[in-house]
Amino acid sequence: MVTQDNVYSMLALLVPGILQRLIDERNINENEAANLLYNSELYKKLEIENTKLWHLSSFALYSLLKEELETGKITWPEEQ
Image (cartoon, rainbow, N blue to C red; front, side):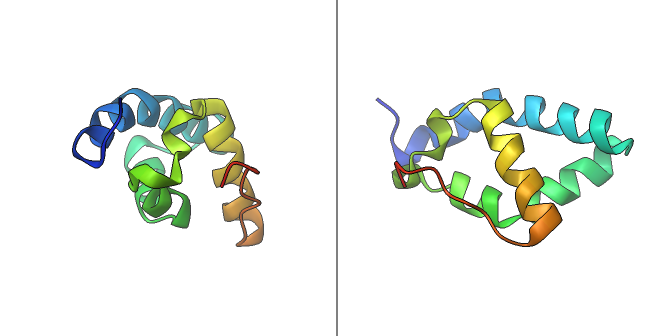
């Protein structure tokens, strides 16, 4: 069971995939990718266990991040 205390363990599994997609698709370096992710609204919500965003794949999370970066908005999954 994932709790707020161990949600960062889940993030350690998800973040590398999101960062790699940012690097590949935007042709940016790792620091730029990390800044985009860690300063996003998506990441703020991802850090909160009860949003349950940690259960999404890194691909799905990247899609939400891409939407946020392109439009300034996020269409949250229905489970939200």
